[in-house]
Picture 1 (tube, rainbow, N blue to C red):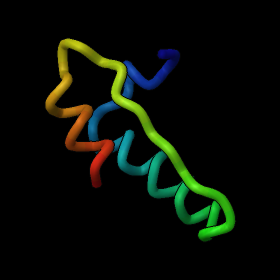
Picture 2: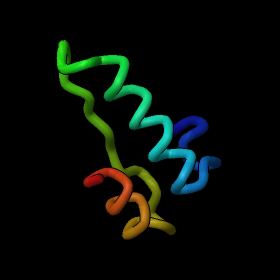
Picture 3: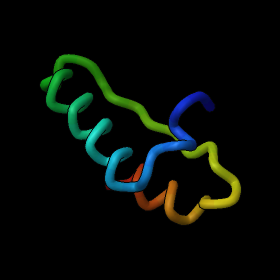
Length: 48
């Protein structure tokens, strides 16, 4: 799980956005949901 659980939803979106921009379509970017207490919020971040 690592540091992901300490990020806010906005921070998670920013990290994912940066990863997608860096990959620039060359490789798939996968993200997961690993936070049980905030499952719905984490799911919302993952599907954006």
